[in-house]
Image (cartoon, rainbow, N blue to C red; front, side, top):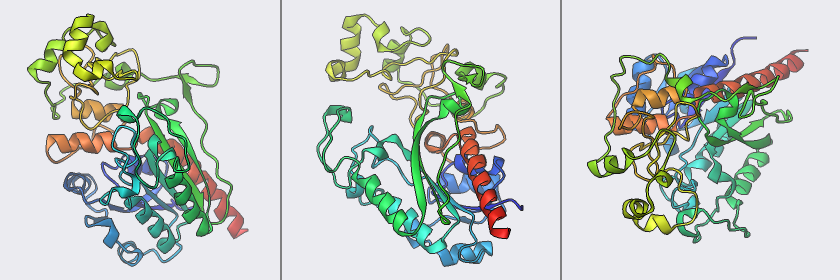
Length: 368
């Protein structure tokens, strides 16, 4: 069987693309309109057809024209629509976010127009509970609201995809369970045009290793051997450094004296929830928390384990399992966004290998 082809949309920093590529897919097309994503893709894959316009203006006809693939010939359509509208860390406007919310249904439109043999869509954990309409959530969105709107966006999304004739299922993954040195929760939706029952790859790593599962990889594992790192590094303000210098490796705000906790956190000191990201200093001995787009914020800090600075772009990329020869372009803050929003490469590879196997089985049956 020839390498199955893949059309990528909402490609961003191309972590999903690289993982699928390592799984044996031939990436034939990619699309994103973030300038840093465009320049990054063009620098690393100069021959890859890349669409840099509004996804709402992207047609199946254009994709077919530049790839030479006819209707129904796309093996896999993959992408991660913008997740800010559904993230529990954001305002959770859902479809009320006129710029980003509806884009998730542009993915559905392309499934309908391209009729790929399979589709793979990635998003944040918040997609599982996101509402199709905005409603008030408790402070910091940590409370649970179970009502008729809870999860209504996902139900509508699945209904539209099933109406197109696809079998589908979804699963929440922890990237650490697949060899990524990062405890990152993400949701994947997977479907097949021929009705193939959907399954997902089993974990290869665990917090508590066993005969069949390797131990979770750590930040120390990820950064081992990294030298001559000249990538962009944000800076903590002097105020933030005042408190972070008091935090030991692996610690956070709880390691400060109570009066300093109140002084440094303000109203957040009295909020509910763990607030584990406040004045957080990472540990070489543990997996990283989720790599974020702004590692220098007080409430979500990604402070280096022993140095008084945030992680660099390359260190974040190592933790996201990008290869070192994948260079990020654009302003530094945009590079952080590309890395932080990306699918970890090794997680994408694990899922890609599973999907490739299912497509191979389908091809074998179809040819017999």
